[in-house]
Length: 360
Ligand code: RAM
Image (cartoon, rainbow, N blue to C red):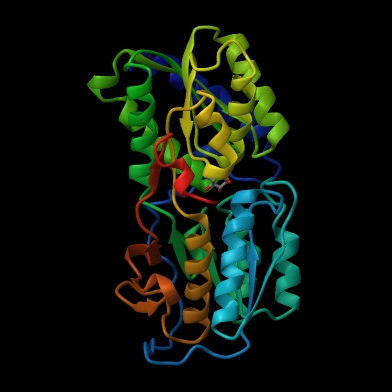
């Protein structure tokens, strides 16, 4: 990458803007890292009993970044299906916007309802922590999934895939598509999102390698996981950088909006687009030549695994300590890793050859 200095300048400007607008949210500099978090707070003094049966009638609430996002609808539908399998009661609640503190009032309500577990994808690693600490003090188990909280906010984190792999492979996919040359931009979700910020850090690290010396990251734009804003941000990127070679959008909302913009513009097929998307939202854009390839894990499996993890915690099978094992229905056995992290598995790369094999 040839532009270390412009990137630093950009980071500074973005940081200042964030400080002005974060409204209680977490600025980039203190965002918890999705893979390098310090050890989780001790989950419980009770010892884990791997043979304890799953308690009947567990009430588990899924709290996504936002409710009107097909990615979370798929994840939470499967999470709720998991609760039905083990005789529990699942539900989805959450804000319509993915802003930093939008989840706090939902957590407070779930505490009042005495839910057994909360499964949360954090819009901000820290803004939700005081409320989640109260939930934990009230005996409610907390599982973060998709986007982690600071470690003291949760018992375990169900991670969709290695954050490092996701960050690096998105750069690799785009590099291949643009012949390792040209200006590139990132269209992210919200500026506070733990998951996107962690992936972006790995993207920057990957771009620092000599093989990407002819690629220049010119801008990180934020579509806030809002379809219209993501669309407008894409338009803005192309206006500011008419010679842009490619865009990485590590958000299902962002990549779908960017694809819609590009597919209807003279840039279609010329400005390359990759990132993280759902096959159902992007199928038409792969078929019409707007997108060559992108990746994602199975969001349904992520929700299902998080549901079983919540049940394992609430039943005393695990406490969140490294090395503990639990069974996740049809997905089989999982082990809690370092820092209370459970890893779903490897993502899939989708292109015209395999996209019709997937329905989510
Ligand atoms: C959006 C959300 C979610 C992220 C996916 C890839 O739906 O930002 O957190 O994991 O994209």
